[in-house]
Image (cartoon, rainbow, N blue to C red; front, side, top):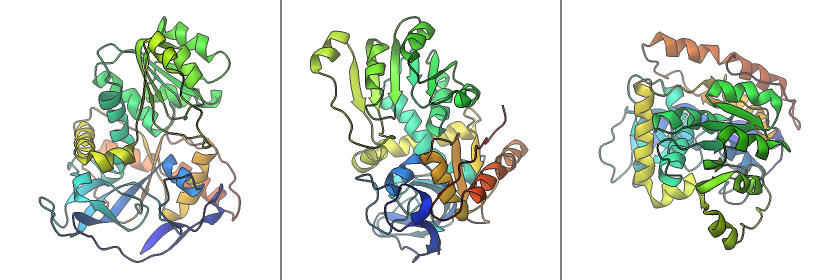
Length: 372
């Protein structure tokens, strides 16, 4: 079968290729899935560059979220049948025509939801929901600051905040060119991460912020603390910049500021509390089915476009959420609005991928997966 293969660690796409790999067979508690669409995430880039804890071995097939139909059911699996439409978390290997998933980490896809859209649900949408509910414990009216707000998780967080009863939404971006994307995603206030960010954030919030979501490691932690309201919750859920994170602030600073710092790891939660992860996945698929949640998704042309898209993410030029279709079996819902949306977002990334596919380097081409 065809799969994206990273042959060894690299800062660029020069060690990523599409190749033939054996079709996996499910073990106990697992199912195999004919993948109709797979999500692309920054974690793939972290694996590619060799960050500890991401690639299990080399060569490595990336991909942590898929949607498709169940191909084969392993031993000790109940309630799952061959041919069932599912979305699932994978422990790598998702960017392939067939992927393995633990039966405890999948959910049925409602018929109103297309499989390309469902492929964005396991990692992106479930992460956004769990950040707000299980970790930050969002309360009615709470203001939320999101660092790096124009990406896929940021877009999902912006839409979930009002659904959960939250208040003011403030999102930050790395450059002014991304401000329209953050605003289009639903952030009430979009700010550039520059020397005036602290003052601008406090002015927008009318003081401090109740919930701060930060995927940038400890790079922005001092700034997070500077804008935290009393009883604020700061959630660190990634290390997008790479490198060794700095030590956390002294206990006295947290006690004195009445501020809590929490960490979140989806991979850790799938290992220790899979039932919570599965519940989150089921819930976000339900929100998609009843049109409560609308997340723009950019579909790539094929697996051949994945390496260039990874480089867009690595270079900070990505916008929104990317998925790649893998089979012609992708069942599409009867809702014409969703069908038109999927077609509309397909070609820009394909053009960018083709432009940046030369071996050993990736030419950055700005991509706009939706118009503003």
